[in-house]
Image (cartoon, rainbow, N blue to C red):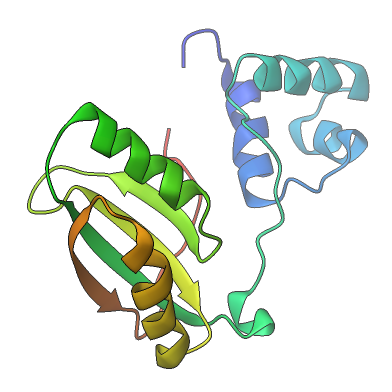
Length: 153
């Protein structure tokens, strides 16, 4: 957070909740004129504080409301197998998030599917074709309680 002042932090807090604000609206919200706000936002983007702007879609509207967290253990741990697993996962559309973790599993995948049948097909045909996977453990989401992209700073 080095180099950020209170105005920068205010802009980030506003944008993380709604990145659709115009520069003029942002300027009004932080009591500055549009020109310095534009420069600040560009600096925040260029310095990597803002990675990108996205639209968060409602998976249920696309008939993909069946959310599963799939824990993965690799067959063995070596660089080649790990890199191949990552390349394979990057090419599977149903996987929307993938984390390399410590503990009992090596990776956690967040998967969107239509229903249990679609997820079963995904496990057998897509995950089943990833040779580096030793085992999987699936946890099915019953209800989403909190989903935010905010970072408390």
